[in-house]
Amino acid sequence: MPAPTTTLLIEGSFSELAEEFANYIDSLRKEGSLQSEIAPLLQPIREQEQSEGEPDQKQYDEVLKKIVGAATALNGAPEKEITPSYNLLVHLVQQSSDPDMFLPRICTYLAKPFTTSPQFGPTLAINILTTIFNTLSANDSSRYHVLLAIVAVIRQSGSGYAFEALKPQLVDQLPTWLSAWELDAEEAQKLHLAVADASTAAGDDDLAQSHVVQALQTIPAAESTKPAARDLGVRALASALRRPTVFDFTPLTGSDAVQALRSSDSTLFELLEIFTSDTLDAYEEFVGANPLASISGGVLADASDALQTKMRLLTLTSLASSTPSRSLPYATIASALRVPASDVEMWVIDTIRAGLVEGKLSQLRSEFLVHRATYRVFGEKQWSEVQGRLMVWRRSLEGVLTVIRSERERFVREGIQAAADQEAAAAAGKNGDKGRGFVDRRRNPQQASQPREVEGTAE
Image (tube, rainbow, N blue to C red; front, top):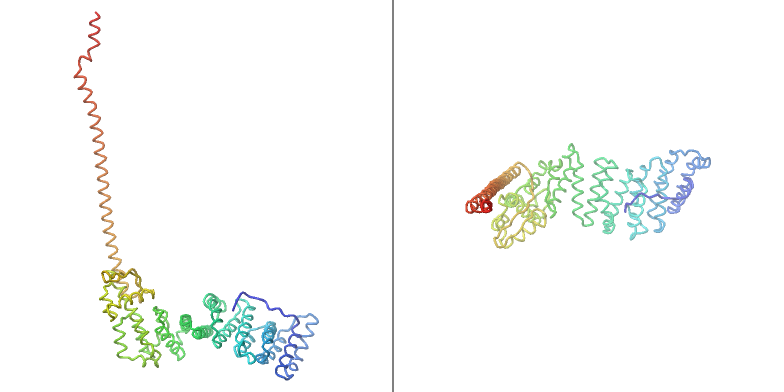
Protein backbone atom coordinates (compact mmCIF):
# COMPACT_ATOMS: atom_id res chain seq x y z
CA MET A 1 0.00 0.00 0.00
CA PRO A 2 1.11 3.63 -0.44
CA ALA A 3 3.99 4.48 1.86
CA PRO A 4 6.71 7.16 2.11
CA THR A 5 8.33 8.05 -1.21
CA THR A 6 11.00 5.60 -2.39
CA THR A 7 13.50 5.48 -5.24
CA LEU A 8 13.65 2.84 -7.97
CA LEU A 9 17.28 2.10 -8.89
CA ILE A 10 18.08 0.34 -12.18
CA GLU A 11 21.55 0.35 -13.72
CA GLY A 12 22.20 1.13 -17.36
CA SER A 13 21.79 3.95 -19.86
CA PHE A 14 18.43 4.77 -21.41
CA SER A 15 19.41 3.37 -24.80
CA GLU A 16 20.69 0.10 -23.34
CA LEU A 17 17.65 -0.42 -21.14
CA ALA A 18 15.20 0.53 -23.89
CA GLU A 19 16.83 -1.93 -26.29
CA GLU A 20 16.80 -4.65 -23.65
CA PHE A 21 13.10 -4.01 -22.92
CA ALA A 22 12.21 -4.05 -26.63
CA ASN A 23 13.97 -7.38 -27.10
CA TYR A 24 12.04 -8.80 -24.17
CA ILE A 25 8.70 -7.62 -25.56
CA ASP A 26 9.56 -9.14 -28.93
CA SER A 27 10.33 -12.45 -27.23
CA LEU A 28 6.95 -12.38 -25.53
CA ARG A 29 5.16 -11.54 -28.74
CA LYS A 30 7.42 -13.91 -30.71
CA GLU A 31 8.15 -11.25 -33.30
CA GLY A 32 10.95 -8.69 -33.76
CA SER A 33 9.02 -5.61 -34.72
CA LEU A 34 9.54 -3.41 -31.62
CA GLN A 35 13.31 -3.64 -31.52
CA SER A 36 13.53 -2.80 -35.21
CA GLU A 37 11.13 0.12 -34.81
CA ILE A 38 13.05 1.84 -32.03
CA ALA A 39 16.58 1.08 -33.33
CA PRO A 40 16.79 4.19 -35.56
CA LEU A 41 15.29 6.31 -32.76
CA LEU A 42 17.87 5.07 -30.26
CA GLN A 43 20.89 5.87 -32.47
CA PRO A 44 21.01 9.65 -31.79
CA ILE A 45 20.29 9.00 -28.12
CA ARG A 46 23.19 6.57 -27.91
CA GLU A 47 25.51 9.14 -29.52
CA GLN A 48 24.44 11.78 -27.01
CA GLU A 49 25.07 9.36 -24.15
CA GLN A 50 28.56 8.56 -25.43
CA SER A 51 29.44 12.23 -25.81
CA GLU A 52 27.85 12.97 -22.42
CA GLY A 53 25.79 15.73 -24.02
CA GLU A 54 22.42 16.96 -22.93
CA PRO A 55 19.73 14.44 -23.92
CA ASP A 56 16.96 15.45 -26.27
CA GLN A 57 13.79 14.67 -24.33
CA LYS A 58 11.70 14.64 -27.49
CA GLN A 59 13.75 11.71 -28.77
CA TYR A 60 13.20 9.90 -25.46
CA ASP A 61 9.46 10.48 -25.75
CA GLU A 62 9.34 9.07 -29.29
CA VAL A 63 10.99 5.87 -28.11
CA LEU A 64 8.73 5.63 -25.06
CA LYS A 65 5.57 6.00 -27.13
CA LYS A 66 6.43 2.82 -29.01
CA ILE A 67 7.64 0.96 -25.92
CA VAL A 68 4.57 1.81 -23.78
CA GLY A 69 2.25 1.00 -26.67
CA ALA A 70 3.71 -2.51 -26.88
CA ALA A 71 3.95 -3.03 -23.11
CA THR A 72 0.50 -4.60 -22.88
CA ALA A 73 2.33 -7.84 -23.73
CA LEU A 74 3.74 -7.84 -20.19
CA ASN A 75 0.40 -9.11 -18.89
CA GLY A 76 1.27 -12.40 -20.57
CA ALA A 77 4.80 -12.63 -19.18
CA PRO A 78 5.83 -15.48 -16.87
CA GLU A 79 4.73 -14.78 -13.31
CA LYS A 80 8.23 -14.33 -11.88
CA GLU A 81 9.15 -11.85 -14.64
CA ILE A 82 6.12 -9.57 -14.38
CA THR A 83 7.33 -7.38 -11.50
CA PRO A 84 10.90 -6.71 -12.76
CA SER A 85 9.61 -6.06 -16.28
CA TYR A 86 7.13 -3.44 -15.11
CA ASN A 87 9.75 -1.90 -12.81
CA LEU A 88 12.04 -1.47 -15.83
CA LEU A 89 9.19 0.06 -17.84
CA VAL A 90 8.43 2.55 -15.07
CA HIS A 91 12.11 3.47 -14.81
CA LEU A 92 12.22 4.20 -18.55
CA VAL A 93 9.04 6.28 -18.42
CA GLN A 94 10.49 8.40 -15.62
CA GLN A 95 13.18 9.57 -18.08
CA SER A 96 10.46 11.28 -20.12
CA SER A 97 9.94 15.02 -20.13
CA ASP A 98 6.38 14.31 -19.03
CA PRO A 99 5.78 10.88 -17.42
CA ASP A 100 2.09 11.80 -17.17
CA MET A 101 1.80 10.98 -20.87
CA PHE A 102 2.56 7.33 -20.19
CA LEU A 103 1.71 6.42 -16.58
CA PRO A 104 -2.10 6.42 -17.04
CA ARG A 105 -1.77 3.88 -19.86
CA ILE A 106 0.55 1.68 -17.81
CA CYS A 107 -1.97 1.80 -14.97
CA THR A 108 -4.71 0.57 -17.29
CA TYR A 109 -2.51 -2.41 -18.20
CA LEU A 110 -1.96 -3.22 -14.54
CA ALA A 111 -5.67 -2.98 -13.82
CA LYS A 112 -6.26 -5.84 -16.27
CA PRO A 113 -5.75 -9.53 -15.39
CA PHE A 114 -2.39 -11.24 -15.80
CA THR A 115 -3.17 -14.25 -17.98
CA THR A 116 -0.18 -16.21 -16.71
CA SER A 117 -1.04 -15.65 -13.04
CA PRO A 118 -4.80 -15.68 -12.42
CA GLN A 119 -4.35 -16.52 -8.73
CA PHE A 120 -1.61 -14.09 -7.72
CA GLY A 121 -2.09 -11.54 -10.49
CA PRO A 122 -4.02 -9.00 -8.37
CA THR A 123 -1.37 -9.12 -5.65
CA LEU A 124 1.41 -8.61 -8.20
CA ALA A 125 -0.48 -5.70 -9.78
CA ILE A 126 -1.08 -4.01 -6.41
CA ASN A 127 2.59 -4.41 -5.48
CA ILE A 128 3.76 -2.92 -8.78
CA LEU A 129 1.29 -0.05 -8.58
CA THR A 130 2.30 0.63 -5.00
CA THR A 131 5.93 0.83 -6.09
CA ILE A 132 4.99 3.29 -8.84
CA PHE A 133 2.95 5.36 -6.39
CA ASN A 134 5.79 5.57 -3.92
CA THR A 135 8.40 6.54 -6.49
CA LEU A 136 6.38 9.64 -7.34
CA SER A 137 6.58 12.77 -5.23
CA ALA A 138 3.70 13.51 -2.86
CA ASN A 139 2.45 16.40 -5.01
CA ASP A 140 2.72 14.60 -8.34
CA SER A 141 -0.72 14.43 -9.93
CA SER A 142 0.31 11.16 -11.65
CA ARG A 143 -0.37 9.51 -8.32
CA TYR A 144 -4.07 10.03 -9.07
CA HIS A 145 -4.00 7.54 -11.96
CA VAL A 146 -1.98 5.06 -9.94
CA LEU A 147 -4.39 5.21 -7.00
CA LEU A 148 -7.34 4.75 -9.35
CA ALA A 149 -5.71 1.60 -10.71
CA ILE A 150 -4.98 0.28 -7.21
CA VAL A 151 -8.60 0.78 -6.18
CA ALA A 152 -9.83 -0.86 -9.41
CA VAL A 153 -7.66 -3.95 -8.87
CA ILE A 154 -8.84 -4.27 -5.28
CA ARG A 155 -12.48 -4.01 -6.34
CA GLN A 156 -12.12 -6.51 -9.16
CA SER A 157 -10.20 -9.01 -7.04
CA GLY A 158 -12.51 -8.70 -4.03
CA SER A 159 -9.47 -8.86 -1.77
CA GLY A 160 -10.61 -7.87 1.70
CA TYR A 161 -7.05 -7.95 2.99
CA ALA A 162 -5.84 -5.53 0.33
CA PHE A 163 -8.76 -3.19 1.00
CA GLU A 164 -8.13 -3.18 4.75
CA ALA A 165 -4.47 -2.38 4.06
CA LEU A 166 -5.46 0.56 1.85
CA LYS A 167 -8.32 1.85 4.02
CA PRO A 168 -6.21 3.82 6.54
CA GLN A 169 -4.67 5.74 3.63
CA LEU A 170 -8.11 6.48 2.19
CA VAL A 171 -9.36 7.75 5.53
CA ASP A 172 -6.30 9.70 6.71
CA GLN A 173 -4.32 10.68 3.61
CA LEU A 174 -6.75 10.96 0.71
CA PRO A 175 -8.01 14.49 1.59
CA THR A 176 -4.39 15.72 1.67
CA TRP A 177 -3.62 14.00 -1.61
CA LEU A 178 -6.66 15.48 -3.34
CA SER A 179 -5.65 18.94 -2.21
CA ALA A 180 -2.06 18.49 -3.42
CA TRP A 181 -3.06 17.02 -6.78
CA GLU A 182 -5.48 19.87 -7.58
CA LEU A 183 -7.89 17.65 -9.48
CA ASP A 184 -10.81 19.04 -11.39
CA ALA A 185 -14.36 18.15 -10.32
CA GLU A 186 -14.74 15.31 -12.82
CA GLU A 187 -11.49 13.60 -11.75
CA ALA A 188 -12.31 13.96 -8.05
CA GLN A 189 -15.78 12.52 -8.62
CA LYS A 190 -14.34 9.58 -10.54
CA LEU A 191 -11.96 8.76 -7.69
CA HIS A 192 -14.63 9.05 -4.99
CA LEU A 193 -16.96 6.75 -6.92
CA ALA A 194 -14.15 4.24 -7.46
CA VAL A 195 -13.45 4.20 -3.72
CA ALA A 196 -17.18 3.87 -3.02
CA ASP A 197 -17.46 0.87 -5.35
CA ALA A 198 -14.40 -0.81 -3.81
CA SER A 199 -15.77 -0.15 -0.32
CA THR A 200 -19.10 -1.70 -1.24
CA ALA A 201 -17.36 -4.75 -2.70
CA ALA A 202 -15.39 -5.11 0.55
CA GLY A 203 -18.55 -4.77 2.67
CA ASP A 204 -17.68 -1.36 4.15
CA ASP A 205 -20.97 0.43 3.50
CA ASP A 206 -20.19 3.37 5.78
CA LEU A 207 -17.05 4.32 3.85
CA ALA A 208 -18.92 3.76 0.60
CA GLN A 209 -21.69 6.14 1.68
CA SER A 210 -19.14 8.75 2.71
CA HIS A 211 -17.48 8.76 -0.71
CA VAL A 212 -20.78 8.74 -2.60
CA VAL A 213 -21.71 11.93 -0.74
CA GLN A 214 -18.29 13.43 -1.50
CA ALA A 215 -18.74 12.55 -5.17
CA LEU A 216 -22.13 14.25 -5.06
CA GLN A 217 -20.55 17.42 -3.72
CA THR A 218 -18.25 17.70 -6.75
CA ILE A 219 -21.20 18.33 -9.09
CA PRO A 220 -21.38 22.02 -10.09
CA ALA A 221 -24.73 23.76 -9.72
CA ALA A 222 -24.91 24.27 -13.49
CA GLU A 223 -24.80 20.49 -14.05
CA SER A 224 -27.11 19.45 -11.20
CA THR A 225 -30.05 18.72 -13.52
CA LYS A 226 -28.15 16.48 -15.94
CA PRO A 227 -28.99 12.75 -16.05
CA ALA A 228 -25.64 11.73 -14.53
CA ALA A 229 -26.17 14.12 -11.62
CA ARG A 230 -29.72 12.85 -11.16
CA ASP A 231 -28.54 9.22 -11.06
CA LEU A 232 -25.86 10.03 -8.50
CA GLY A 233 -28.32 12.03 -6.41
CA VAL A 234 -30.78 9.13 -6.34
CA ARG A 235 -28.00 6.70 -5.46
CA ALA A 236 -26.71 8.86 -2.61
CA LEU A 237 -30.17 9.54 -1.22
CA ALA A 238 -31.35 5.91 -1.42
CA SER A 239 -28.12 4.74 0.22
CA ALA A 240 -28.47 7.29 3.04
CA LEU A 241 -32.07 6.27 3.72
CA ARG A 242 -31.15 2.59 3.79
CA ARG A 243 -28.07 2.89 5.97
CA PRO A 244 -28.94 2.23 9.65
CA THR A 245 -26.14 4.53 10.82
CA VAL A 246 -27.07 7.60 8.74
CA PHE A 247 -29.32 10.04 10.59
CA ASP A 248 -27.89 13.39 9.48
CA PHE A 249 -29.19 14.30 6.03
CA THR A 250 -27.71 17.81 5.98
CA PRO A 251 -24.94 16.93 3.45
CA LEU A 252 -27.66 15.70 1.09
CA THR A 253 -30.11 18.55 1.51
CA GLY A 254 -27.26 20.98 0.86
CA SER A 255 -26.43 19.38 -2.50
CA ASP A 256 -27.65 21.02 -5.71
CA ALA A 257 -28.04 17.62 -7.36
CA VAL A 258 -30.31 16.39 -4.55
CA GLN A 259 -32.29 19.62 -4.58
CA ALA A 260 -32.83 19.07 -8.30
CA LEU A 261 -34.65 15.82 -7.41
CA ARG A 262 -37.50 18.02 -6.18
CA SER A 263 -38.47 18.26 -9.85
CA SER A 264 -37.20 15.02 -11.38
CA ASP A 265 -38.03 12.67 -8.46
CA SER A 266 -40.49 14.60 -6.33
CA THR A 267 -41.73 11.55 -4.40
CA LEU A 268 -38.23 10.54 -3.33
CA PHE A 269 -37.48 14.12 -2.34
CA GLU A 270 -40.67 14.25 -0.28
CA LEU A 271 -39.53 11.12 1.54
CA LEU A 272 -36.22 12.84 2.30
CA GLU A 273 -38.08 15.77 3.84
CA ILE A 274 -40.05 13.38 6.06
CA PHE A 275 -36.86 11.75 7.31
CA THR A 276 -35.32 15.15 7.82
CA SER A 277 -37.97 16.68 10.05
CA ASP A 278 -41.22 14.67 10.33
CA THR A 279 -42.50 11.77 12.40
CA LEU A 280 -43.67 8.18 12.03
CA ASP A 281 -47.28 9.26 11.44
CA ALA A 282 -46.27 11.30 8.40
CA TYR A 283 -44.08 8.48 7.10
CA GLU A 284 -46.85 5.86 7.32
CA GLU A 285 -49.29 8.22 5.67
CA PHE A 286 -46.76 8.80 2.86
CA VAL A 287 -46.09 5.07 2.36
CA GLY A 288 -49.81 4.40 2.29
CA ALA A 289 -50.15 6.78 -0.65
CA ASN A 290 -46.80 6.01 -2.32
CA PRO A 291 -45.64 2.36 -2.21
CA LEU A 292 -41.87 2.14 -1.94
CA ALA A 293 -41.65 -0.02 -5.05
CA SER A 294 -42.97 2.87 -7.13
CA ILE A 295 -40.39 5.45 -5.98
CA SER A 296 -37.59 6.30 -8.46
CA GLY A 297 -37.53 2.94 -10.16
CA GLY A 298 -37.85 0.93 -6.97
CA VAL A 299 -34.52 1.94 -5.36
CA LEU A 300 -36.15 1.45 -1.94
CA ALA A 301 -38.42 -1.46 -2.78
CA ASP A 302 -36.81 -3.88 -0.31
CA ALA A 303 -36.06 -1.33 2.43
CA SER A 304 -39.43 -1.16 4.18
CA ASP A 305 -38.30 -2.57 7.54
CA ALA A 306 -35.08 -0.52 7.60
CA LEU A 307 -36.93 2.71 6.83
CA GLN A 308 -39.61 2.11 9.46
CA THR A 309 -37.01 1.30 12.11
CA LYS A 310 -35.03 4.43 11.33
CA MET A 311 -38.21 6.52 11.34
CA ARG A 312 -39.11 5.28 14.83
CA LEU A 313 -35.65 6.24 16.13
CA LEU A 314 -35.93 9.68 14.57
CA THR A 315 -39.44 10.17 15.94
CA LEU A 316 -38.25 9.37 19.45
CA THR A 317 -35.38 11.81 18.93
CA SER A 318 -37.83 14.57 18.00
CA LEU A 319 -39.96 13.78 21.06
CA ALA A 320 -36.93 14.00 23.33
CA SER A 321 -35.68 17.26 21.83
CA SER A 322 -39.06 19.00 21.97
CA THR A 323 -40.10 18.02 25.51
CA PRO A 324 -39.74 21.07 27.80
CA SER A 325 -39.89 19.05 31.01
CA ARG A 326 -37.23 16.61 29.81
CA SER A 327 -39.43 13.79 31.05
CA LEU A 328 -41.07 11.42 28.57
CA PRO A 329 -43.69 9.00 29.92
CA TYR A 330 -43.57 5.50 28.47
CA ALA A 331 -47.16 5.90 27.33
CA THR A 332 -46.25 8.95 25.21
CA ILE A 333 -43.37 7.11 23.57
CA ALA A 334 -45.45 4.01 22.89
CA SER A 335 -48.17 6.10 21.27
CA ALA A 336 -45.75 8.05 19.06
CA LEU A 337 -43.84 4.96 17.93
CA ARG A 338 -46.94 2.77 17.70
CA VAL A 339 -45.35 -0.01 19.72
CA PRO A 340 -46.48 -1.87 22.86
CA ALA A 341 -45.53 -0.28 26.17
CA SER A 342 -43.36 -3.32 26.90
CA ASP A 343 -41.15 -2.44 23.90
CA VAL A 344 -40.56 1.18 24.87
CA GLU A 345 -37.34 0.56 26.78
CA MET A 346 -35.90 -1.43 23.85
CA TRP A 347 -36.55 1.47 21.46
CA VAL A 348 -35.10 4.00 23.88
CA ILE A 349 -31.95 1.90 24.27
CA ASP A 350 -31.62 1.58 20.47
CA THR A 351 -31.95 5.35 20.12
CA ILE A 352 -29.28 5.89 22.76
CA ARG A 353 -26.97 3.43 20.99
CA ALA A 354 -27.48 5.37 17.77
CA GLY A 355 -26.11 8.44 19.55
CA LEU A 356 -29.30 10.42 19.05
CA VAL A 357 -30.26 10.86 22.70
CA GLU A 358 -28.82 10.48 26.18
CA GLY A 359 -30.82 9.91 29.32
CA LYS A 360 -31.98 7.56 32.04
CA LEU A 361 -34.84 5.07 32.11
CA SER A 362 -36.98 5.05 35.25
CA GLN A 363 -38.95 1.81 35.48
CA LEU A 364 -40.39 2.88 38.81
CA ARG A 365 -41.96 6.03 37.33
CA SER A 366 -42.34 4.59 33.79
CA GLU A 367 -40.59 7.52 32.16
CA PHE A 368 -37.48 8.41 30.20
CA LEU A 369 -35.48 11.28 31.71
CA VAL A 370 -33.79 13.08 28.79
CA HIS A 371 -30.30 14.47 29.37
CA ARG A 372 -29.50 15.33 25.76
CA ALA A 373 -31.23 15.03 22.41
CA THR A 374 -30.07 15.70 18.86
CA TYR A 375 -31.99 18.18 16.71
CA ARG A 376 -32.75 16.59 13.36
CA VAL A 377 -33.07 20.03 11.76
CA PHE A 378 -32.37 23.44 13.18
CA GLY A 379 -34.72 26.10 11.91
CA GLU A 380 -37.07 28.76 13.22
CA LYS A 381 -39.02 26.29 15.35
CA GLN A 382 -35.86 24.98 16.99
CA TRP A 383 -34.61 28.49 17.65
CA SER A 384 -37.93 29.22 19.39
CA GLU A 385 -37.51 26.13 21.54
CA VAL A 386 -33.97 27.14 22.46
CA GLN A 387 -35.18 30.64 23.30
CA GLY A 388 -37.91 29.21 25.53
CA ARG A 389 -35.46 26.98 27.34
CA LEU A 390 -33.03 29.84 27.77
CA MET A 391 -35.81 31.92 29.30
CA VAL A 392 -36.65 29.11 31.72
CA TRP A 393 -32.98 28.79 32.57
CA ARG A 394 -32.74 32.54 33.03
CA ARG A 395 -35.70 32.58 35.38
CA SER A 396 -34.17 29.72 37.33
CA LEU A 397 -30.89 31.60 37.62
CA GLU A 398 -32.73 34.75 38.66
CA GLY A 399 -34.44 32.73 41.40
CA VAL A 400 -31.10 31.36 42.54
CA LEU A 401 -29.57 34.86 42.52
CA THR A 402 -32.51 36.19 44.55
CA VAL A 403 -32.01 33.50 47.17
CA ILE A 404 -28.25 34.13 47.26
CA ARG A 405 -28.80 37.89 47.54
CA SER A 406 -31.35 37.43 50.34
CA GLU A 407 -29.05 35.09 52.25
CA ARG A 408 -26.15 37.46 51.81
CA GLU A 409 -28.15 40.39 53.15
CA ARG A 410 -29.33 38.29 56.10
CA PHE A 411 -25.74 37.25 56.80
CA VAL A 412 -24.59 40.86 56.70
CA ARG A 413 -27.41 41.97 59.02
CA GLU A 414 -26.66 39.18 61.45
CA GLY A 415 -22.99 40.05 61.35
CA ILE A 416 -23.67 43.69 62.05
CA GLN A 417 -26.05 42.80 64.87
CA ALA A 418 -23.54 40.35 66.37
CA ALA A 419 -20.82 43.00 66.23
CA ALA A 420 -23.12 45.54 67.90
CA ASP A 421 -24.08 43.07 70.61
CA GLN A 422 -20.44 42.26 71.21
CA GLU A 423 -19.55 45.94 71.56
CA ALA A 424 -22.46 46.52 73.93
CA ALA A 425 -21.45 43.57 76.05
CA ALA A 426 -17.88 44.83 76.21
CA ALA A 427 -18.99 48.32 77.21
CA ALA A 428 -21.32 46.94 79.85
CA GLY A 429 -18.50 44.86 81.28
CA LYS A 430 -16.24 47.89 81.65
CA ASN A 431 -18.94 49.96 83.34
CA GLY A 432 -19.70 47.13 85.79
CA ASP A 433 -16.07 46.92 86.92
CA LYS A 434 -15.94 50.65 87.73
CA GLY A 435 -19.16 50.59 89.77
CA ARG A 436 -18.04 47.69 91.93
CA GLY A 437 -14.80 49.49 92.91
CA PHE A 438 -16.67 52.61 94.10
CA VAL A 439 -19.12 50.60 96.22
CA ASP A 440 -16.26 48.69 97.85
CA ARG A 441 -14.70 51.88 98.97
CA ARG A 442 -17.99 53.09 100.40
CA ARG A 443 -18.47 49.82 102.25
CA ASN A 444 -15.01 50.13 104.01
CA PRO A 445 -14.64 53.79 104.98
CA GLN A 446 -12.49 52.83 107.90
CA GLN A 447 -9.90 51.20 105.66
CA ALA A 448 -9.63 54.44 103.76
CA SER A 449 -9.10 56.53 106.92
CA GLN A 450 -7.04 53.96 108.83
CA PRO A 451 -3.68 55.63 108.35
CA ARG A 452 -4.93 58.78 109.94
CA GLU A 453 -6.21 56.85 112.95
CA VAL A 454 -2.75 55.29 113.41
CA GLU A 455 -1.15 58.66 113.18
CA GLY A 456 -3.60 60.07 115.76
CA THR A 457 -2.88 57.25 118.19
CA ALA A 458 0.82 57.93 117.96
CA GLU A 459 0.35 61.46 119.13
